[in-house]
Image 1 (tube, rainbow, N blue to C red):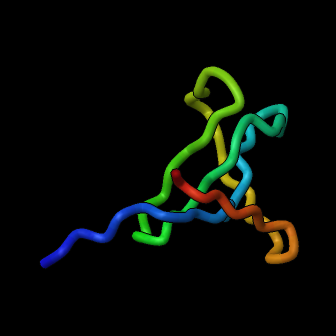
Image 2 (image 1 turned 120 degrees about the vertical axis):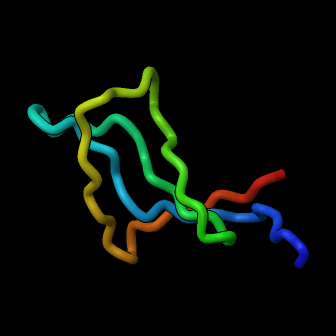
Length: 63
């Protein structure tokens, strides 16, 4: 079975700190179904995901 390459991804959520609800990154879902964290700076350990509305989705192309 051929393995699908990551070619594009879309933002499916915001990564927010639990207490302060500070926006610290995005959660991407690739065309392969794999999800990946994209942090603005250093990763945090105490976080939650906040879903994005469809109109706010951002697409990422892998080169």
